[in-house]
Image (cartoon, rainbow over all chains, first blue to last red; front, side, top):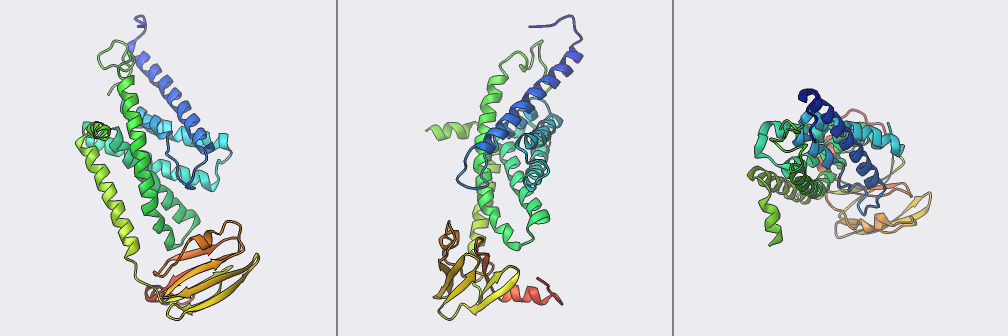
Length: 190
Length: 132
């Protein structure tokens, strides 16, 4: 479906906006769903909302990933009623470090890194970000860092799972006209 | 093998990152195990120290808390909580501690059992005054 009467550059901008809005909404939905699911280990979240940030990163660019993640963290916390609570700051600091790790690694490694690598690094960043926030704001006990190995293992597992999901999704999305590289409808610039 | 199919989808760098992080994890776990054995068991309650004893001598102690009596036992240089009036018995499930810095906590009964050793004592001696 090509709108030949419209300036393609403007079209691309509008489509990017719309897709990022959709990604953000999906991320919020996944984040909320995950929060409601029971979990055997108190802090173990797969972080499936991060899949959308991965999609934004690989289909668009780093800025897109930041938008999706930051919007998701703030809005989801409003829905869940945890805005500005300690839980929110843990989520935020984890999210900031995770997104920073993801965008930086993609920027430095370019095509050499895939969704799984980026996702695992993001998950690690998230774990470290949460521990740092807990250290600074909540618990000043040295024993806190004994949690790192356990959180790191869970982060690696979650990161790999998310990465593969994102990988499959990207493979399928790229076949669609909106994201195919040489399509006239292409909206992505990667 | 299905697992190999997944491995194939990763770039070289991806594989390196995953392997490196797993190795780091393993190292951290080993480091947890390598902590030096401690010397004293210190029990704290509501910011005050309630009980102190060396790990070297076997003994059994009753610790009083708002919920009731928590029994702490020191045997063979290790400390553990034997029984406690809390609902989930997390403190009992924690098992034995003997390394410096290890902790068992019974939060409902407001007890914190920690093993301290020479390193912790040296650390505290760096301060002129500590108020709890």
